[in-house]
Image (cartoon, rainbow, N blue to C red; front, side, top):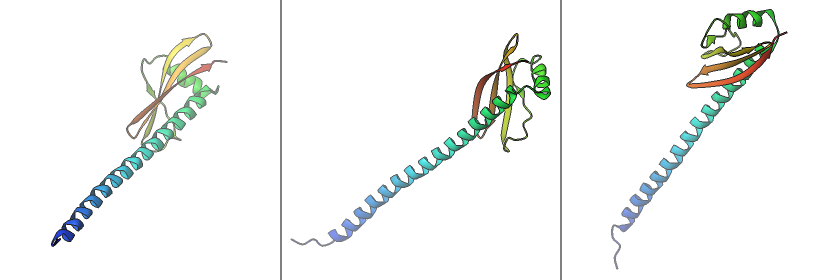
Length: 124
């Protein structure tokens, strides 16, 4: 039995299967890389949001003035934080004030994500 021409067809089919396998591997690697970058960006936002929420708990004249201003606002107010990386924005909203307790929410926006945390501040 003669197999004339089958060797060329075998090579073409093998290259085609190898190309499809390479496409699947490349797509998986690209998707994984994008996911890792997105997770790192979101982790940075969470860290910055926690840092701002904790810094607002500290009793200081600057924080007292900022929260006094928040009492006259309904929604989120831009928080002037010089430590945020470029492209990130911090906003704070006073949720509830009851005696010596102030419940507030901090939101940090950046790179397509929003992270929001709630915290409570005790007045002195």
